[in-house]
Length: 248
Image (cartoon, rainbow, N blue to C red):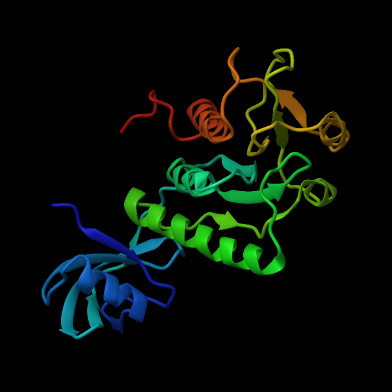
């Protein structure tokens, strides 16, 4: 039986006992029907996980006894930053969830000239909190013990003006010619994905001046959410930890 994994943003120590945060406790009691004696796995985003057992359930108050600390690293050696123009509806939720499962290290939501979505400051804060919750849920499901960093939404040009530690930077552009990928495997990659209507010519010029190379993923034009996941899968397969040749 697959154990329930829970993210808890508190200090954890082997052999100790904690009371779960109210929202987390309410969820496992009301939705998962947790009972005393049920096993759990807890993690706090610092790279380790702790097997635990529910000590007691009193209403929506749940205490957990922690077992030994296990340093389980499921992070890719390839640090990938996804710069994603925010799409309409709940597509960004989908991108955040799947990008987290695919091992992305950082997500930068951006607003570009052709973005349909427009966010005021209050909406930006609300969206950021929501996306971080989506990433937490994805980490609980996929076994990651570190959360991807999700930046506050920003204008694309402001992002381009900021320094980057990526050793290779790309923008997905279906109309570009196929260019050879660098022979030296990158350590940190940044890939930028446009909105539903694509980037403007001026934005593509700005990205070229910022050092981004155009990258084409085959002859077909992909939806923005498909393009993001295709790029992440390709990068992790070629340079990261999704290589089928790596032994289990």
